[in-house]
Amino acid sequence: MNYSLAEFAALSSRDVSQAAHGLARHFNFSLQSAFSASHAYRERAKNDPGLLFEVIKLDRLLHLGRREEAILLLSRCFGLVGSDAINVIESRQFNPPVRAAG
Image 1 (tube, one colour):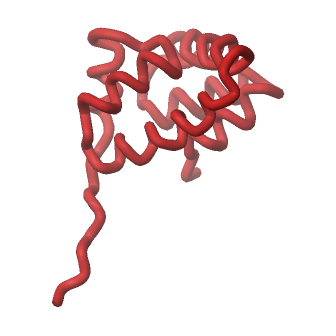
Image 2: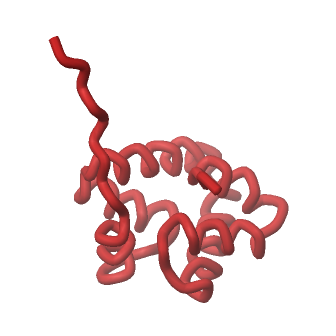
């Protein structure tokens, strides 16, 4: 299943358990960490409706391998700091977009 962080954000408002399971697969970390991150996101999103856009941006930053910016958004969106954030970054395979020749 290709699970995006935007799907996580939409799901987290309805079913934190299912959102956490998807997040665990997406970030390749423990279910316990995923539940913690899911709850942190849900609480933060209640007070910051713009957080959804940051989650979408995070997915793109992770894909592009922009580590420093991604670490900041992992903290802001999910409360992941230090080794937790770095582990997410390192577990992701960065596949920069292929540029057309010519």
